[in-house]
Image (cartoon, rainbow, N blue to C red; front, side):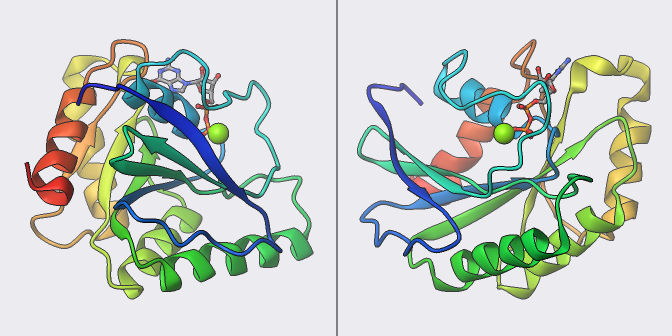
Amino acid sequence: MVIRSLNLETVCGITSSLPDNLYPEIAFAGKSNVGKSSLINGLMNRKSFARISATPGKTQTINFYNINEEIYLVDLPGYGYAKVSEKEKIQWGKLIERYLQNSKQLRAVFLLIDIRHAPSANDKTMYEWIAANGYRPVIIATKLDKIKRSQKDKQLKLIREGLSVLPGTVIIPFSSVSKQGRDEIWSYVEEEVLGV
Ligand SMILES: Nc1nc2c(ncn2[C@@H]2O[C@H](COP(=O)(O)OP(=O)(O)O)[C@@H](O)[C@H]2O)c(=O)[nH]1
Ligand SMILES: [Mg+2]
């Protein structure tokens, strides 16, 4: 994918109405600090267009990045941040649910899991929630550079088993440091979403 233009076009909070977009959307979900902003920056070839947090942020917004007037990358708010109140968790859930249920342009959902750890209960819930809304999530195993090459297959197996993924589920290892996996993600999007 050649990035010719990009624009953070819409930022939706808990009370905002969601945009009625013209182009296909692909969404990214995952716990806070899993590397979602880094991945989105990597896909856009930018260092810091999407915010990267040293301390995991609490901002509960859905951000729509318009790429080339062709496709939207949708950054869903992260979950699992310890300092979030019960009320904020409920609002988070409602915002994501509203998006998953109502978007007419959502074509693919990517669920990010840190390759170093087995999926958490929250990750499993998120996976099932995405599936319950009719999507077959693609798993992105993030922070690939943090493990030894010899550990990769074992960690990927841990993720598959931890989430009880359906047979045929695509898992793409990714590193925002080496950018390994970037081309594979774009190829998937080009083939499965854009049909080019
Ligand atoms: N080594 C390494 N660090 C990463 C990678 N992706 C993200 N990080 C770091 O993990 C932290 C959280 O990243 P961020 O993209 O803000 O996560 P988000 O909360 O999911 O958006 C930051 O310190 C990043 O620099 C990766 O692939 N490799
Ligand atoms: Mg982020």
